[in-house]
Length: 390
Image (cartoon, rainbow, N blue to C red):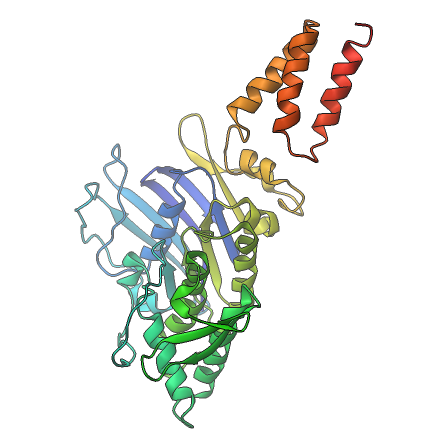
C-alpha cells in the first residue's frame, strides 16, 4: 500500500514555496489557470520516476526541490528530489525516484482520446517489470481496445483467466453503463475484432461514443487495464488496488452532469486507492467532501497558497456554481460586461432619479435575465417605487 501524506514544493514552475497535506482517499486540486495544479501532479508522479525528470525549476532559482512524505507498506518515508533544469529540452539526471514502487502509481494526462484502430490480430499484454517511465509520460489509452478484445476472447475459455481477471472483466463490461444506463457492452465481432455496444438497443461501434464518454472510459477502463498489467503474480482485482491514481483535468470534455458522476464512479470502483485530480469544474467541487478540496490562490507577491475559506463541515455542498467560480476558482467576475453595464446604468439612474434612463435599462435587463430570475421583480419594485409620484 502507498499513501502520500504531504508534499513541500520549492521553486518549481510557478510554485515558490507550497506545502500541502493530502486526504487518504480523494484530493481535488483547483484554482486559476497557470497556478500550478498540473505541476503538483507532475511532482507527485515523478517522485516515483527513474533517474530522469521533466520537472523544471523556475527562472529565478538555482535549484528546485520537492520533498514528499509517504507511507509505503506501513513504513514512513521522506523522499526529496531536486532539479536544475529550466530549458524545455533539458532533462538532468539528478536523483533516482522511488521507481521500485512505480507499478502502484497510475497517471492519466489530458491526452485521453480513443480513436478507431483496426485490429488484424490480438496482441498479448505488454510486458514490463516496472512502469516508472509512465510517471513522466502518463498512461496511454492506445492499447485499451486490444486489451478489451483479448479479455473478451479468453473469458469464454474455461481456465484461461484467473478469478480476479474475470472479476475485472465483468466490472469492465459494466463500466459502459455507469455514465449512461442506455449504453451497454454487447459483443466483439469475430470478423474485425471491433467492439460493439448497444445504445437504446441500437448497435454502435465503441469508437462512435462521444469524446466525453471516451475520455471517461479512458480513465475508468484504463485503471482496470493498468492494474492488471502491473500486478500479475497474482493478478489483482481493481477494487483491491491500494496505490496512487493521478488524473489531470478530470472534467475534460464532460457535460456538467457527468463531471460530478465521474467523481462518484471513481470512488466506487477504487475504494482502496488514493486519488489526485485537477479540475476546473465547480460541479465536482460542489459534491466533494471539504477535506478533499485543495483550492489554490495567488497572494499579492505571486506566492501560491491554499485557500482556507473552505474549512467547513460541508465544503461547497451548499454553494452556488457562481460562488465557487468566484471564491474557489478565482474568477473576478462571472457575468458579462454588457450585463454589468446595464445594471450599473440602472442603479445610477435610480440614484439621480432619471426615470427614462432607468426604464430603458430595465427593458434591457428584463430581456437579458433568466426567465425565472427573482432579480427582475426586485428591479421592477425599485423602478416603480422610486418614481411612484412621477
